[in-house]
Length: 287
Image (cartoon, rainbow, N blue to C red; front, side, top):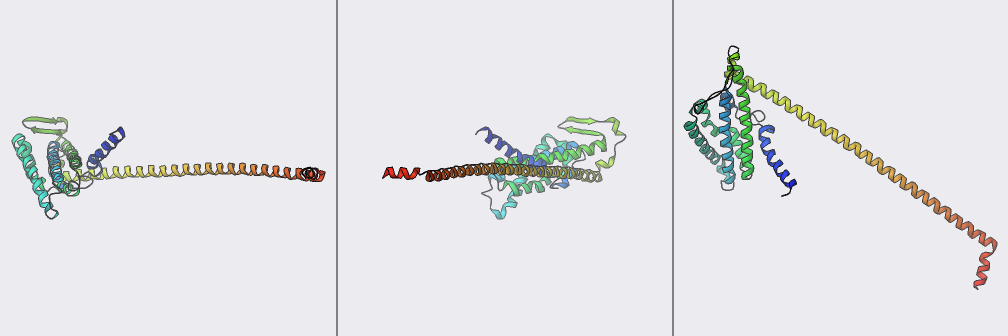
């Protein structure tokens, strides 16, 4: 593979990941997985834990479903997908319960509910069941990272304004995050309540939609500007060609005028010769 092929390959695979993180973000663009999004983002660390658990299940289930896509019959593909997803969710539950029990307890019922998460089922049906293994893994990674980033963003805002802390908690017996004492007396408890979750979620979605529309408008304006430039360049080229054709025609006309002048000169010389009798003399000599 040469450099151009490598660059094209990396660009293609990178676009699959970026598709899940930005273009079709599962939370803010597709509005999937709203229930765990609102329920587990009262703190940033819970949102991060939920997102990483879902990412693990997404990647593993996408890979296995892609491997079995030609084996699973169409009529039972949805039950088969659910069984595969449930297997990895159970594995995640066992790992969290063993090594990070505090996070396992914080996520509660929403951890096993990953089995019926719309994001995972949707990617299994729409992408993994029709694409190759590596692309399916990248798709799961992109969607998982987009889901994790969204949950962390909502969790950071809710925890900062509602509790005056950032990533404050405990993971595997290790204290994490910081508690901002200056904000403790000014924190708004509504942000860590369900109403605060809806409020932050709605405001962020409105902001992201606004920025997306603004970006799309800029792209459209650039595309229109490029079209206008192309038309201008095309008009310039047409004028240049017209000038060339005019010059060529003028040269041809000049050449034809010169040829006509030479022909007239030849006729005049012939008339003069006839009038002088030169041709008659030459004709007599030939005889």
